[in-house]
Image (tube, rainbow, N blue to C red; front, top):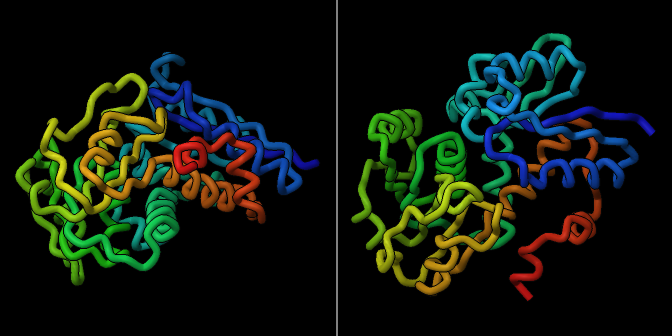
Length: 280
């Protein structure tokens, strides 16, 4: 059985399920996958040093997560103009011509949204967080035909940069906004780390969640977050960050190996997918 060495680089990743996903997907497709975690601060190394060490050590590729999705861009070649516009990379394939960068958060979000909501358009969306995950989700919302994206971020310059990257946005209006945008939103997206293990809280103030509509939380560890509780209390159809994790992981695995598990439900069950329990 061929052995494939992969990894994940990020700061707060000790509870990540990515190693399990890739190892199980590997077993399902006839591969022995080794998937290790690389935490630059814990290793006493900078992100570029860890990235280069992974390449030099013979890994086939790495996933990249918070806070390095934008920092990795200068270190890779991005051949897809659409991904270059996103300005964020979460999947890197080491090749003879150098590291190639991809964004499976973008494709993963689109697949997760359509899997949950079918052909329904997102409508007016309040997108909270304009960092690496927020950038990929914003482009995904445009691809899904969102009517409007209201960008909410504590860093106005970062939100402005994303607005500029989305221009011309086609049929989607993109504007900078504050918490007031929540009142008229059809959908609310948390693309911040708030709610993740080590980052307690929600980006939405209590009582400010709009009634009905839909909501997506990019956080998946844990699956039950304050943001999720607020969304369900407001009657929103809720899309868990686990769905993004799962679909982006499948897309990344396919990039790394050229193979794709045929039975995705069996993979979910083998992972102990918590969204299956929450839906039952």
